Image (cartoon, rainbow, N blue to C red; front, side, top):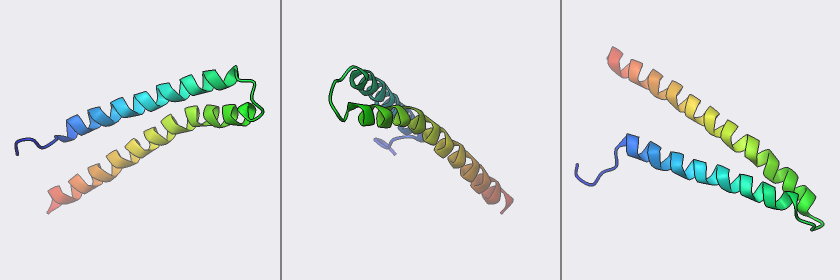
Length: 79
């Protein structure tokens, strides 16, 4: 249908959003590293954790999605 998004374009949009979020987390982490606020240490640790956890969770989510859709495609081919 005209005007509908393909799965490829949706993945591309989500990838751009994910890269933007990761870049923003790096910038926030860098700013917090030089901040002199009392809470900066806690925020820095949280930002640093998110910098590693977000890409890892995103990777795991995509891996599970591929496994589930692959199994779904195999079951529909068997019918």
